Length: 224
Image (cartoon, rainbow, N blue to C red; front, top):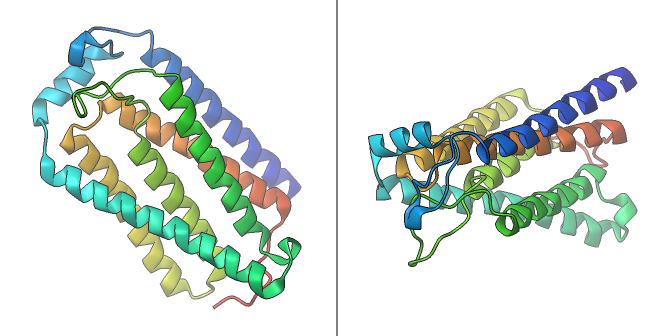
């Protein structure tokens, strides 16, 4: 288990390194003023080409917005589960550590979002309410990916039934895939914004998985 945890942390570190390198590349490679109000965008040639192939698709924008709400409800469900355990067991120490770690993971993900809202890499392909809005990484992809991928891990901790696990796995993969494809088709972000969301999200998810493994977490209550 210790060797497996070390490999997991090493893999996590590689993804964080890749995320940093990709973010730097987006700010330095083929940077051109192709955004609204001549805002600068990296990998401009590929981003402009892909953006021109679709154009704004309000249907997919609406679909992905509803999926975002579904992801937030999923996160709220785990928060309520943790709160219920706290009220029932009357001690933070008796709450499943994986749920406590999940709460910390949500806070870390929100902190990453605030970081990129403050340190802007590039802006969206269209003005929002008449103004420029940060676009890298796609916060929608980042949050849906992070919430749903860690939800799978929690579900596997809490549920023993293989059929239920498999069904939830398929549901989660579908939600993430539709979010990425739908956000691409809606042209709400540049293509590299979506890649950034997936790459940074993967690094965060792997970090959560590694920490849970290192903690040797096992749920206190019986699995279903």
